[in-house]
Image (cartoon, rainbow, N blue to C red; front, side, top):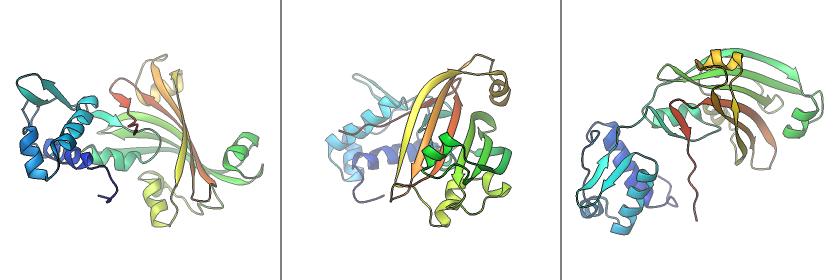
Length: 236
């Protein structure tokens, strides 16, 4: 863990690791605040903050006078929207997989050029995919990558993690602008995500930018909401 990471993340990661390993079972009482404080060499205030974070994420629940319990965890709890689906799923103990629908180069239109800060007609990679968590379709996404930065993409890369591949190529984002809204599934997306036409979906758009502020990835994603929700942590 990075040295500048909040100390309560130590508590969160410790508890999550015990849940994933099956040491903490659903409905089981976890260690007391004093035990966690001693075991992790952090203050009880830090322990309390870490536990509260997990309570807010619906991973733990507290019963006054009894203790803190592990909740039965939904399969797709606590995902963060936008990027890094494969790594996020693996971190949650969920097996990610991908169905590639289309991969091709296109010429940027006016809207794409404005988002990507390129000229109209410049080349982009178009990647259309369905993302699965434990073989359940959860995301339909259409992404664009600046072909002058992302020189090569192929089916194997797109069926795994594009961002892991880009990291290996020395291409990474410094920040991401994100828009989140709601929409209803049309017939095409309903079939892809195995939901009813008109079912509510989480609709996101991201623009991922490098350190110099240049965008290299614009992505659109629709998330099914039957067993999936998005989570953001806001720091003071």
